[in-house]
Length: 128
Image (cartoon, rainbow, N blue to C red; front, side, top):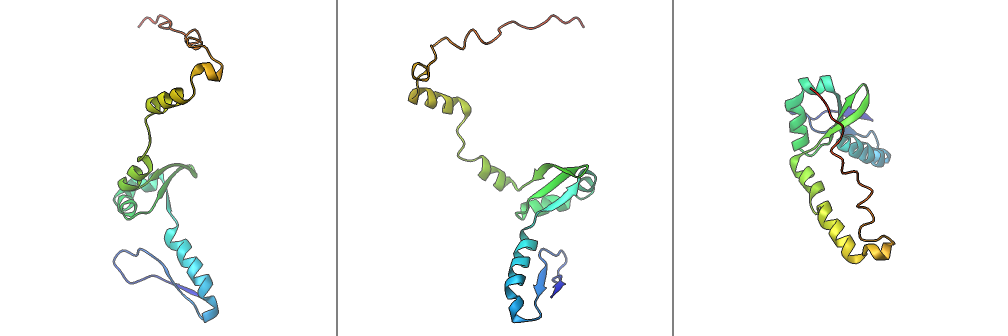
């Protein structure tokens, strides 16, 4: 089995040519892994390759950014971010719905039970 880059200006996928028909399954899995595998850049590399990273994200790849070898961020296409955020209910609405289904009396709390827990003090005085 040998790896061959397609002849394009900017290669997008790596093709794998099998030496026999028995290698077809292995070729398929390796192709899927290579083409779907996200890229990883250190912060320094990301700074110098930002236009390329944005192009890759627009093309649907997830780009991982690392700091000292540990993942700290991911660059994704805007449409993917909107898909991930879509359908979310704001917290206030979800909480109101919860209270409508499960009144505090049923949960075992009185209406004003949590009022006394919160400290309403403005904080300490600071002189600047």
